[in-house]
Image (cartoon, rainbow, N blue to C red):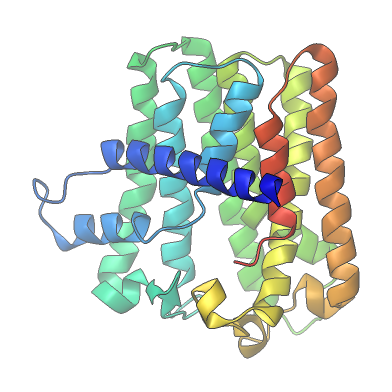
Length: 305
């Protein structure tokens, strides 16, 4: 029980640290007074696990990073993640009116402003990441490499590509296969988790082999995370999840649960998570340790929201 309490407290402390960084980098909506800027801040400040910046920071620490150069990238990855949610919730996409217990951005500000707010967050993310060049610990080659990862994993070869495949599957007359679903999950969900952890490793100076291992571990974490989302959409409640449950069934979406069943999906989710943990713990043989990072991944297996 003490271990559970301890990890929750550590997550809370790190979440607060991420929130402070976000506040420092978000645009000032009192200076830039417009509905779009207010909607951008509303969207980011709606809350969330802050998992991606947290994974980025902890991977950076795993490889010995301890400078502020990581902070603009932590803010940027959360802005990109948030913009994807803003657009996902739109009537043309998932048509969701609630997320994290609050009205979604389009439900609060209207569709047009929500579209622009998403666009604004994506562009502002790169404006923010570029500030890393002038931060403590900045190495030009490493920052450039991190920017390249961010652009690739967020773009048509990553998250946007996954969203495109998801939309195509919804409009297809053919039943979605497991390999197609995994492609969607890899690109739509795992890509930003890969970006987070790879950027942390690159900025800390990890070598190419280590970054490749981190990319694989992050893939497995991302797929496991999405499978848990699919499970929670069936088993959770509105109060726990902060958004309507059963939305996948309502939208006739094929998920890991509909293809595999809850028991098998849960088993595979744990298997993926445990393998990813093994990859991370293996870095200990090279002198790289971060117990919290592995505990964080473990906590994702049993999360209820």
